Amino acid sequence: MYLHIGSGIMVETQKIIGVFDSKGAAKDLCCERKFRRERDYSCVLTDDGAVFSELSAATLKKRAEGAFDEY
Image 1: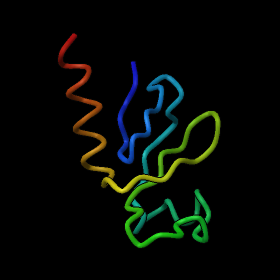
Image 2 (image 1 turned 60 degrees about the horizontal axis):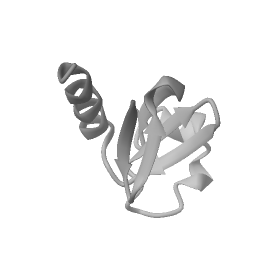
Image 3 (image 1 turned 120 degrees about the horizontal axis):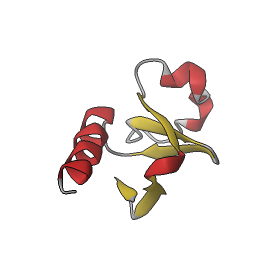
Image 4 (image 1 turned 45 degrees about the vertical axis):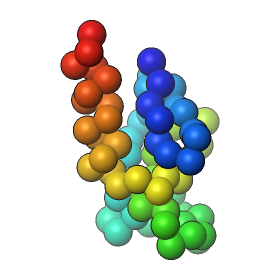
């Protein structure tokens, strides 16, 4: 299953380690300098590295939970 994290980016849910808000722990975990755009609100940490999203961590959580509710 895949999670759409915005900007046309899909991430395989099995590879997701965590989703972090840009104002919290994500700045330490995902390297603050990588939040290069003001519109990066969250960091999705995967087995392959960090991916930045314009969507909030709360929105991504709802999307992920909604995807599992369908099955």
